Image (tube, rainbow, N blue to C red; front, side):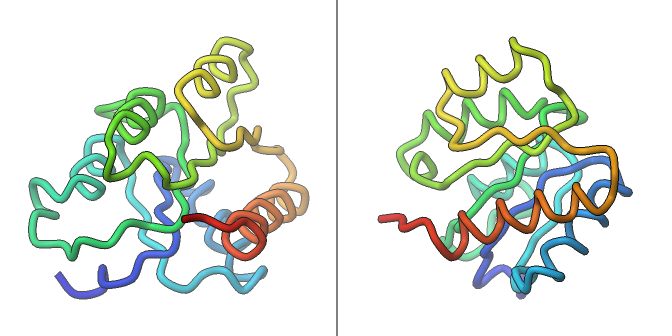
Length: 145
């Protein structure tokens, strides 16, 4: 499968509007190279663990995962749990970018090892700035092993 040799950011977002806004914000921050956008948790797990239609994908992990909580098929909490439980994916930074400000979602995410939790602002400019700053920090400022 060509196009998966280098994946800097894996975006897992089912809402087309939020996905497009996230891509636009990352482009604006010049962080849009090598992004894969998946729309459900099951597909994200297949991608990360090279199964199903992604079984032939090169053995290269994304540098950052932007993950929504409310996803079809497998929710974001379960995806996060699987990522952080597996030696192959544990060190990938995961940022929850979600509309959920529920205390339980935040607590559960941190207990499972999320690196950051960002509540989506409703207004586009603020949303764009938030995503751009998060992407900038995790892609350019943060150092990973």
